[in-house]
Image (cartoon, rainbow, N blue to C red; front, side, top):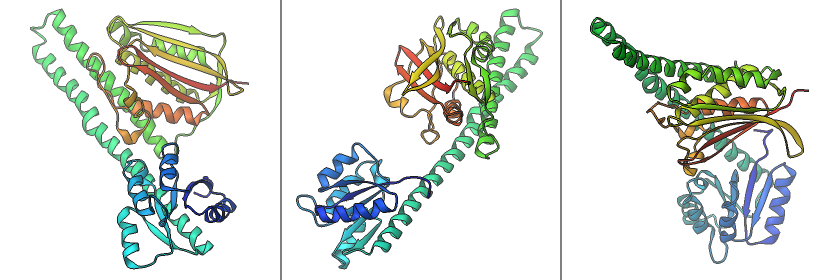
Length: 367
């Protein structure tokens, strides 16, 4: 907690109070924004999400109680702890403060040590709540994958194999091919889930850390693409590749291989028969830094703007079906984000429904 810089929004119509509070917070390393009215505070909250709000009660036009109620109407802002600043210590005012959504109150004139202690306590509680929520989301994701996403394909393999063995003497070549195709697809999906689950579990335990070396990205991309040829051929999907010469990145080869494997697998999953997947990579300068940027672009079903915001985040539990009703867990993209972050890179997606998706990631160039 000590190493992170937290932002506090101060709302008070008294300019002197704002100045004093700003000075106290600045001295302790907090960042802060100021608002002289409830409406101004709501305007600031449309642009930023502070870690805590110090809110004066007695303000013209819109008092602190009404301001707090309006702040809490927004689902994102509802999680921000609000500490009321008040000269009124009567029981009715305190009751209204908590009923409006406040977590605490400080009486004016305030004691600096008390103010800082309460701020630290409520920010710590907020961080602990968020971490608990993240851990619960991770646990729920695991249970969902194991109890549903993994059991279903394994059950399919077992059931189809049993039917195949029972009918083997009566099956012609075409029926055998259909049975084996379904068994192969279910086995392949199970393997993909298990690979992602094992890597994610190791990362949660802290036993998976990046070991960076100079990696030939051309070879990695080419080898991973070839490993997906059978899946692409089964759907009549064509690969196109455009790579710069001798591209080398400074990264963990296994992690980046996992990223590419997941992105290509998803591209195949969400692209219709006869579609195209384009893989390109080259040197690019971004914010005065020279990196290698790689794009894996498909002509598939695309993603809506609303769903794009759910990607890469385990708490959203986002998943969808492919063009042949292939299952998805969403865990692969979460791994991609984690692994790219561990290798000092960035990842983003550009997509449009019924047009396709383009997943783009950057990595540091090798020296």
